Length: 317
Image 1 (spheres, rainbow, N blue to C red):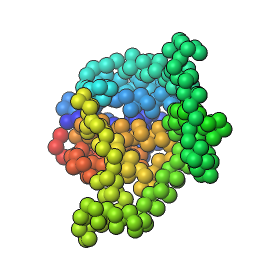
Image 2 (spheres, rainbow, N blue to C red):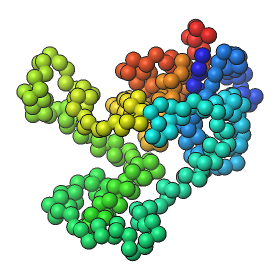
Image 3 (spheres, helix red, strand yellow):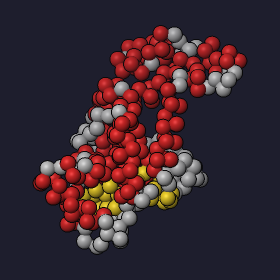
Image 4 (cartoon, helix red, strand yellow):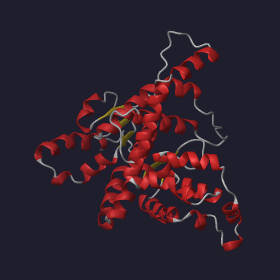
């Protein structure tokens, strides 16, 4: 049996001797369970993403966290590496993996100029885009939209194709680092979704052009599933990765047990993806548990999702 533990479970096990008696008694049966020779427990890069954010705030405790996970998992790692069609199950020293993540973290502190410079300085071809203006009509429209003002501040200030690229580059960074910005983005997205759901012209167009039966319920989710942009899955891409992450995020957007932090939401989706390769997923995060259950149900994935005090639901050890 393969059990995937959320980081909150690893954390409580690490602190078990410091827990009050009631909470300690809750985790002792779990400790017995994961000590069974028939149970394998992996860690993943999603755990390391969680730990990396904590390390940036306070690096003093990271060695203890890594040692605890290493002791429990015996360095069994599950990871979706870029360009691989399937996840890798392998032994990888967790300290080495974490240090490689630290080395990569600095890459995202670069500006667009720095990222695309390649040592060429003023000779970099990216500077040519600074001389290309955008259509005046489009810039005039984004100046009137409050969220567009947040998304394209440099473009509004100085009209050029380069500034559009720079704003889009900064946008994806701000989504991950600025909680208020991500909250504003989700609010705008929810507003647009609500507009779509109530737009009779959209619904009538879909029915008239695609011959959908009148009794079919046309909510946002069904419309999005049927008419979302078709992106190409490359030959070496793992299609299940995209399906799980996308489905998890769609449940987050619905607003119930939503997450206000993009990084937390994405890593919970990543934990859910890795847990989909295991028999059991144990988490005490209510938001993650709900969306993981909904995702597995939607995609017909058989992984059991439970809390630490529900191990009696595991029956086939």
